[in-house]
Amino acid sequence: MKEDYLKQAQQAIPNVDILINLVSRRVKQLRHGSKPLVDSLEHLEPEDVALREIIEGRISYELYVSNKKDAIDQYAPLEF
Image (cartoon, rainbow, N blue to C red; front, side, top):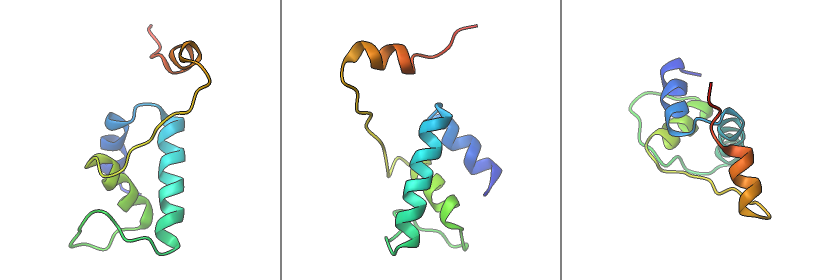
């Protein structure tokens, strides 16, 4: 996995748990034959393809929550 792709993807999706889940699900799809949503002249591992797709805004996610208050409390940024 390319470190620079990971850092850029973390800027797009700062929550590490969500980023890990999104990448792992997309890697699974790619390994089962889904076509990459980004073009590359170099050979990329499926993990790097998934990260590039996130960086370029080609894939996104939606959180399911039973009520908005839980979502705000659970995913609000931590302040120090």
